[in-house]
Amino acid sequence: MFGEINSSMEKNWAYAFARLALGLSMFGHGLVRFPKLSGFSSWMTGQFETSFLPPAFVQFFGYALPFAEFIAGLLLILGVKTRWGLIFTGFILLSLILGATLIENWNALPSQLIHLAFVVGLLVYLPHNAFSIDRLISKKQH
Image (tube, rainbow, N blue to C red; front, side, top):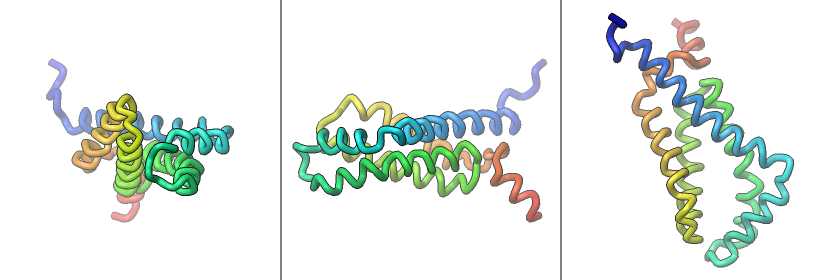
């Protein structure tokens, strides 16, 4: 009656929604921190006082993280260099997971692991990235 449930078009839409959800989350995480960049970095430095990480490193990371999240999110929202955007996002998330474990912030891990699961799934199903600038560019080249 409604056609094949797992058609290529539904997979393409599912991929687009998952990519956009991850992209918007990363983009939003970065965007909301820009106006309070110094305060965010200071907060993060305070969170890691008990860890073995040098405060200067944590402070630098606190300033860099919002830019990394914003850029990763923008790449994913637009579907530009999607593979590299996903790999970049994966490394951001791995660093956050490591950081959370170093300060025993176990409450942060589920969200970070869910985000990373999105990255993994999106990488596996990358051929379904039909609604993206990447696809438009590849069509023009062929």
